[in-house]
Length: 177
Image (cartoon, rainbow, N blue to C red; front, side, top):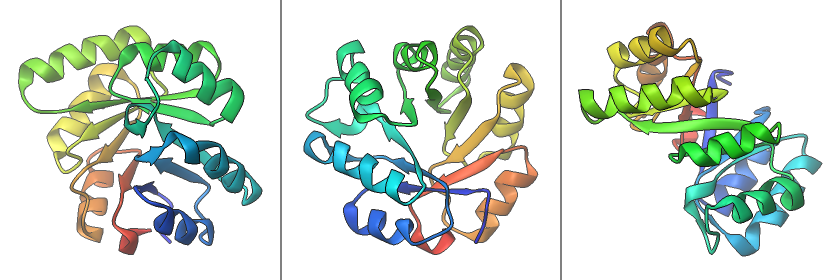
């Protein structure tokens, strides 16, 4: 098992598979609101920590009330979001906050890094995660650990991301778990 790889799940079949692994941390990318409580409960029974992508839960509005539900009622271990307000909300409630950002061009990257310097997420997940120079730059500019995500398809992608400054990688590719 690759300890720097964090499984990023999109369905219950993958969830059932990852529960049988040694991975302690799981990111749930897509689900329905009706499944959230059972997912977290089952994960905790298997000594797993669950980070929910608040933007991708069908039926949940990613505002402060939706986040409050995830944090206080469901008891997620962390929130991942593209919205800095969601990450700030999580951090104020002592829940892990992962700011997801897309490195699409220099302007977007500069804007996102300025936001990250203000809100100080626990981690920054950069997509696509196969941009070695960008991973290094994000860490150097913010001092915040970077998780590489998106388009991580091979062991070589994992290795390259780690060698270029990533703290960890997220992937939905089961073969890399």
